[in-house]
Length: 138
Image (cartoon, rainbow, N blue to C red):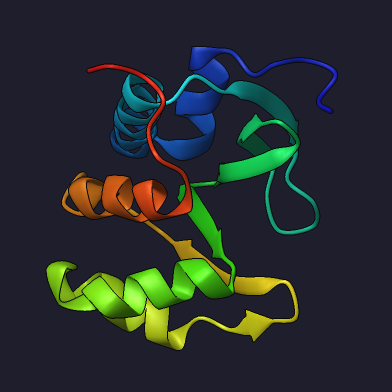
């Protein structure tokens, strides 16, 4: 856990205004669709901070921040990978390539995106829906 939750100005200093806007847009889209616990923590050795969406001990996705870099991760288990593969043509070529290039570990396929705009947001929401059905009315 972070001792201090970063303020908007700290996040803007860290990410830059344009990436902070992408961060905010992603969080808003997730918050619209999912009622989740949200926790801040240090981002380990590669990131300054992590903002994680969880429910019932299961992680939906974390967002990561470091100097001028935003990370958005989804971990797919075997069943989720099967669902993605069955519908892969409905995703952009960029998402398909990142998925294909991501390493599969014993606990799942760890897919890290580095969004710099909102162009993949619709795909991100479809990926999250594979992981967990939205639990909020829109």
